[in-house]
Amino acid sequence: MSLTKTPVSMTINGVLVGPFDVPESLMMLDFLHEYANLTGTRLGCGQGVCRACAVILDHDDGTSEEIRTCITGVGYFAGRKLRTIEGHASRDESGNIKELSPIQQKFLDFYSFQCGYCTPGFVNAATVLVEKLKRQPIDKADVETVVTDALNDHLCRCTGYVRYYQAVKEVILSTPGLTKERPHES
Amino acid sequence: MKAKTLAWGIAVIIVVGAGIVLSGVLDPSYKTAAIDQADTPIPAQLIARGKYLAMAADCTACHTSKDGAPFAGGVPIATPFGTIYGSNITPDKKHGIGSWSSADFYRVLHDGIAPGHPVYPAMPYTSYRSISRADSDAIFAYLRSLAPVPVANRANDVPFPFNIRALLRGWNFLFLRNSLPDASSGSSDEWVRGKYLANGLGHCTECHTPRGALGQLTLGKTLQGGDLGDIHAVGITPGQLAARGWTTADLQHFLAFGIAPQGSAYGEMHDVVHYSTQHLTQADNKALVRYLTGDTPLSPAALPAQAGPAPGTEKVIAAGRPLYLALCAGCHSANGQGKPNVTVALHGNSTVRNEQPHNLIRVILAGVSAKQFPGNQGRQAMPGFDTKLNDQQVAELANYLRASFGGLKADVQPGDVASVRKPK
Image (cartoon, rainbow over the protein chains, first blue to last red):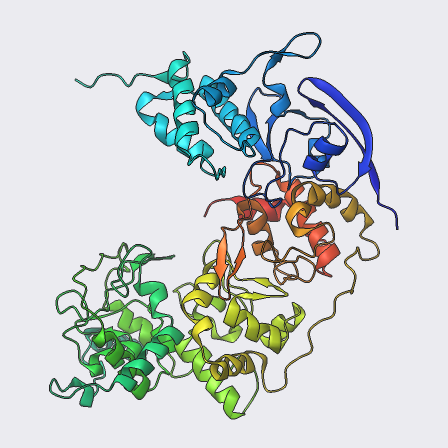
């Protein structure tokens, strides 16, 4: 019995990838690892619970969303644009990292993670949150709730959630335009 | 002239008759029992039996709110006539049933008349009517043995004219029947016991039978499926169960564990398994299934052993398979076999095999929350795809599932999806 194959191509981190002839039931995570040679995205539970495998899907209208690659088939991404953990830092022409993204840097500053296995998913989810707040700023008073809602579903078993939480809060409060002061009540 | 007099006469009789019915002078009354004597100790055995019967009757479903004390009420029950709140049935004298007698309790089960006023038929006295006085007394003894919880009853949110409780006596006059139609044919002792469990205590019919304009059960369509709520209560007649592939053994396992090869309990049925049917004794479990399937169960409808498209459905497969592989196969597997402790199989799944696509569409749109089941089993949350798929795509996906895994026609239309998507 042979696997039914289907051609796919997509844009990952700004680079056109493919077309590759892939098994039609291939999950996106396996495509990243085995075809796109991007191994930073992690396989955790393999059933859509832990979100270590989350990447960013960029929509044509400028919005972005996180999406779990372990339970989403490669076909869903055909012709679409996405970002993985490899695409956050800015690089020089030879591919060396020049500067980390603000979220990545703050995670380091706060020593947010120990083993780092869940980190790619957290970086993507926090980045999606920051991008959303650029479009829709929130009241400063709501930051903690918004961070909780955005990252609650991501599992981390090492650092107890406190430090990454502080890091994301710090990025949001220190980046102009993500928050607004509630008008003073007279 | 004579005809006019006659018409007037009939009108007067109807008005007077209705007045008598609604006034409550015809309300039945019952004798108190030994358990009502304050100085008579209530045997522990009776209380234990009452506890079991209260689980079989699933009192918890409506009388224990998610964040409240057991049996202290407060569960909202949405009906087409307004929201009714389950009442406090702890033995608190002010807010609960602490000042009731066993006769009062039997009357509310049997006639829907509480001390002081009729209750709404959201309280399933239409089914509980067949509960024996002895079993009613046992449940009453159990409830009286609990700690009183002084929580006030929440006022019902029922608009005029349905807030006139006296009218419920008229509803009872029109619709309350001494017995419900049989779900199947049978005469064995096990079938008779199952009938008592299903029609009385279990009150299956209250959700699984369609209702008429005044909220009455459409008895001519008993157990053919009700449509209250987001997830419809599916038809569970012997023919409908067999058509979806249920065997007696699988039904027994489903009621005991909430999981079977045909799928796992979701929607309100998960609560029913959790609070009620998992606690049934093996004998009562078997009896309940015997009644639902009859003394001579039908053979389950066959499915092709291998998942695959029926001839002539190639176009449907071509449209739906990419969606299935992109969004579903990661958990349900490419051939629909599911994964143990993660997801149900879709090949042969009861919801997929249901002729009525409502629940299938609803689940695709809204997903299912994570569930725990007896025996340390679980099913993880399923995401909803209401923002990812348009009506056309949901129809294509549903049709793929029906044709590939359900042995059904691929006849779901985008309009069907739109009507499920539309908030009520």
